Structures are given as structure tokens and as C-alpha cells.
Length: 249
Image (cartoon, rainbow, N blue to C red):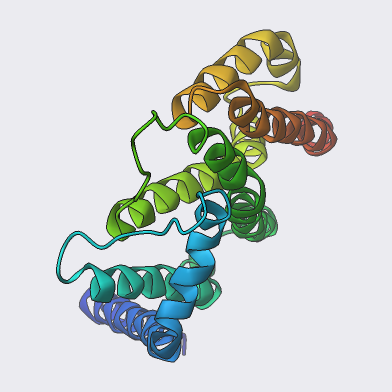
């Protein structure tokens, strides 16, 4: 006697229950990371402020314009760092929910791309903190007009740094975007090689929009994006060509 498949309603309910379980686990990981970081919120903010404070004049510091800024700014930073720390657990829960519905070859492609995306995003954040932001602040602190004291608000500084960090993290996803575009058949390696000049111009424009108007910061962001584009193109040639030959055979 063959095993009967569950009624559609029961199957849907099982998926919803699993989704709720996965979401609860992801939120629990985020909550635990946030609670663990709360006692160190001010220390985290001091680390975040270091790239700017290094270039401020003697006695320079950040200021808190709003009454609640000294409390909420470190809390927001702690929540952002907690999200970064909990991201692997949260992504695993999402993967565990979606993976059973994927074919074997889709799993073989999706999992490495997911891991590469996370790693590249973290590398982009590290690049922003250790390279891009110091170069920006070294330039910006030299452009302060005479008679003006640079006293940045801690909330405004947090917003600026987070935006630059996210922009750098997303910019480092270039090779993943290139690989996905080639694997989906939207473009070919030959087309991307032919369009290299246009891509470099587009990268330069994007870097100029994201950085202050000094050449150093623009080049610092543009160079890794271009190199990552080339890396994605090389890896794409190695992956797409065997797949095309296998499909033709």
C-alpha cells in the first residue's frame, strides 16, 4: 500500500510552522548577540570613533547634540554589530528552510555563492574601517575652514560610518554578481571582457559618488572593485565553460 501524500492544507501548515521555527531561532541568535554586546556598547563606539579621532586636532572630540544621543548611538552600533555576528546563524536558518526545495546542482552552486557573499561583505566592512575611512578623514580634517572647529555629532558620525561600511560591503559583492549573471546566462565571459572599459567607468563613477571629492579615497574604493570584477570574470570563465560543454555534450 503506497504512502499517501499529506493534504495540501497540512503541507502548507507544516511549512509555516517550520518558517516560524527558523525565524524564532534567527531572532534568538540576534537577541543573544545584542544582549552580550550591550555592556560593551560604549567600548564599541570608541573603537568606531578611532579613525576620526586620530586626525582631529589636539583636544578634538565628538559631541552629542541630542540629549539621548549618548545612550542611543552606542545602542544602535551594538545592534548593528550583533546583526553581523548573528548573520551566519540567521543565514543558516534561511538556507535550512529553502534547501530542501532545491535541486542537487542548485545546492552545489547556491551554498558556495552564499558563503562567498558573506565573506566578501565582511571583507568590505574591514576595508572600509581600516583603509577607506582613515583616508577619508585624513582628507576631510584638512579641509576645515579657518576659525571652524570640527566637532561631529556622534549620531551623525555613526550614520556616516555605517553608510560607508555598507556601501563598501556591497561593493565587494561585485564578483558574486558577475558569477550569478554569467551562470544565469544573462551575459557571457566574452561580453564582460568586451565591456571592461564601460565597467571601469561605471565603477569610477560609483566610487566618486560614495567618497569625498579627493582622488585618493575614490581610487581606494575603485581599485578593489575593479580587481574583484576581474576575479569574478576569471572564476566565471572556469565555471561557465565546463557547464556549457557539459550541456552541449
